[in-house]
Image: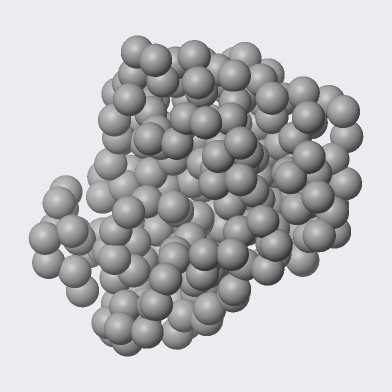
Length: 240
């Protein structure tokens, strides 16, 4: 039983039904099974997957109060999805949302295709590519209400990779930990250049996650200039 996940979701105002629980269990089992031959994640203990992957992912629901309760009409892109976090847990809780999982690493993309099929997730796409390239495609540019990322990168870099996907009026959310004061200061210029508001910090309030986790949120208020994101690798080597 995913007791901690159930309690955490109740804390956020969401009830989880038996089918959703079954899908979370299946996602965890497949993650553990695949991780024996493909390096998907360093978090492999079942209890840790429940808290550090599943609960951490659904914490994004804290800032999605305007979309309830099934995510109808919500278009989400998970940038640098890895093994499907936070995108797949969000999709399981918001079954009527449209989800795109963007990942550049081939082995992880294989797992994403497998898990989307295994969980029978409708309105869910897997995109294989780098954000620097995919964000310039007309089908993806400024098409999403929410771009979310747990990728390990600085906030200016994540902003350049994610905000070009977000429609004006939408939201960019980066999941971060620790003392973010310097990082927020460095990101101010990048967010403004890319059409976002100054970042606001939302502390994750889940009792099961007490290690200074935050949702760093920026609303999209203007179109992103066409030159962003810059060519592959540049947002990492030379952040805005």
